[in-house]
Every structure is written in C-alpha cells, then in structure tokens.
Image (tube, rainbow, N blue to C red; front, side, top):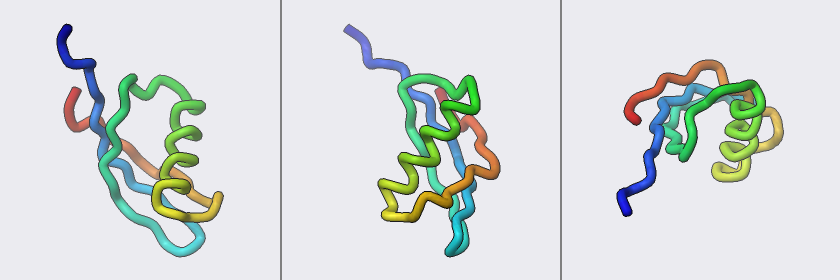
Length: 63
C-alpha cells in the first residue's frame, strides 16, 4: 500500500506568554473550526503551554 497522504501547514499562534510559528502535519485537511480547536489543544500539549493557545493563521504548505 502507498503512503497515507499528509497535509503540512505553517501555523502562527498566540498564547498568554507570546506566540510562535510552527509546522503541523495532519492526516486530514483542515475543514472546520473544530479542526482548528483540536490543533490549538495539540500545540498546547506538545509545547507545554497553557490553554490560552489561539491559532491566528495557517497556510497549507504541501499535501
């Protein structure tokens, strides 16, 4: 079987301590606000940030 399709996004976010930019790889494209909220939660967990993470912008880099 072939490799599963991946979607790589450039993401800018803010939190109470500032903000940052990261690349995020997903198995499905972003379709809804629910997808964005799940990404915010994942960023908070991955980078040990509080729950104040807010995605400002995202751009699909490759799929």
